[in-house]
Length: 253
Image (tube, rainbow, N blue to C red; front, top):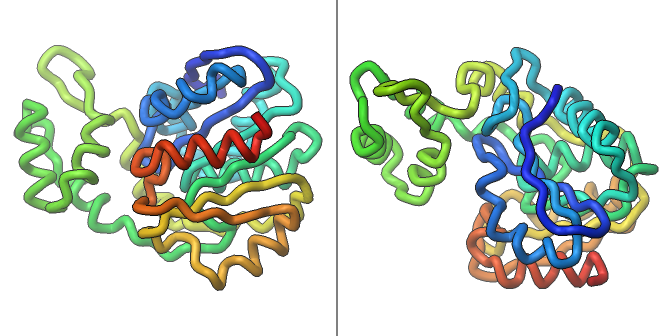
């Protein structure tokens, strides 16, 4: 699958993978700080952003897409940053292809299995009827009525675009995501990745708990875990300064 991407900077390759219902646009600000040191590839994963859509959607095919991307662009010794779902893709890829990865940064996700917890968001998205809601403002009002949390609604609205004149649509493949949502919580414990790995957790996030450190160390024995203060799950957006600082220090820039 030929994934949509944006490339900036020069140097050793650094691939950045977004989370569920995200897109490469979410990472353009952090990428500007990495670009002076790396050739940064911002990638839309399948069923997201401007990449192709498919009925197949699990971590194996996401990792296979990344392998194809690296092979097609003739990359080697890549560094990878993955957030949430993108972090799981990155972990699985590194476990299966350690010879292609130099260093790995995992943003606010552990290799464990997670229970489904996106039901409310998915139901709110499914309830959006573009035949009735024909403006961004009306979609925003509808989602605010359902979800109440402005930051979540604004994150989702970044995926809204004009498919045709007068016709709004989501960039992510909502039916496939909804159908495979349990798979998105799957563990990424295929094998051991025994190379430098940095886990960045948000102070206010519950995605990485102290009891997860044992599992992290089992499958990523060279891992270290750092906490970003005043940040929730979107660590790169909520504490950009420390996210960039810790990442560049780990990458030895």
